Image (cartoon, rainbow, N blue to C red; front, top):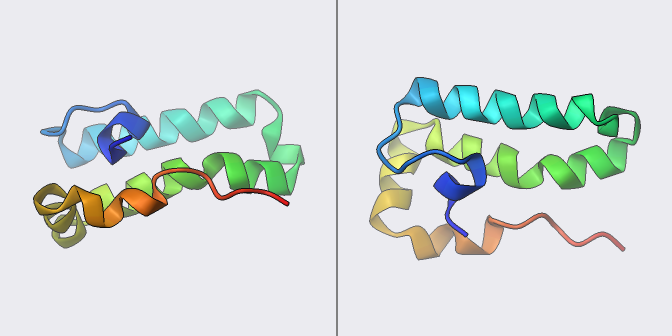
Length: 81
């Protein structure tokens, strides 16, 4: 899954749209009561945080757009024991 798909934005989305999509995803998690379970919240939020970290920075976004497969190993949440 591409980082743009994780946030639900098109690949030509502006920084503002990426930021709004990230905050919307995270706020929906808070609304579902995940916030009270710290480890669950961290695991569930990982793909959104990672996608936002890459796509909100001009240089890392350009690197991702040029070579998305270099970033593919981090697009899913980490496994929990």
